[in-house]
Amino acid sequence: MKQISFTLNGKPVSLKVKGEESLLTIIRIYLEQTGTKYGCGIGECGACTVIMDNEAVRSCMILAEDIEGKEIISIEGLSSEGKLHALQEAFISHDALQCGFCTPGMIMNAYGLLLQSINPNREEIIEAMESNLCRCGAYNRIVDAIETTCNETPKKVKL
Image (cartoon, rainbow, N blue to C red; front, side):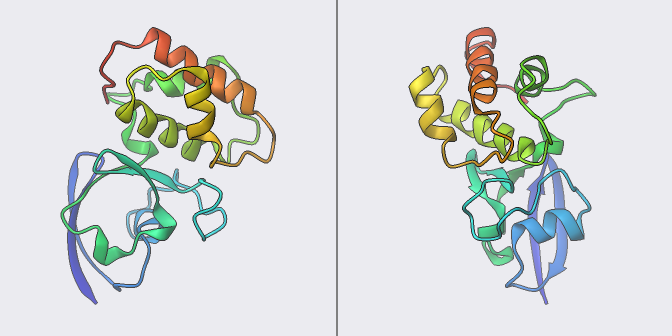
């Protein structure tokens, strides 16, 4: 067992884990934050996407020992004071979800894109999102939701 400390959704976390456990396991099992989903377990589908130090990462591929001192945001940390983030609102208004399983990973990947590029164009959005899989095929609505957020949100993405 190894003691690790990091920040999750703005709150300090310190706990003992096995070093070979994934960030996904820590978030879902140890911390009971179940919005981040287990999809493929090999970093291919994007269902487990979270933000680590302002970059979208696949939490199933990040080992516990690699999160020491990191700042992590999961889907639960995106809303603020009971108000959904603009991306979450846009996904709802564009009906950019069907079964909803991929939605947290899609939103977090999109948030990561907005942290890197303040106003990406449609082609950049498509390129950034093509690594997240949606089995229901809501891709056009997902891209529309992200594009709407880019056009309606102030230049700096806020939590």
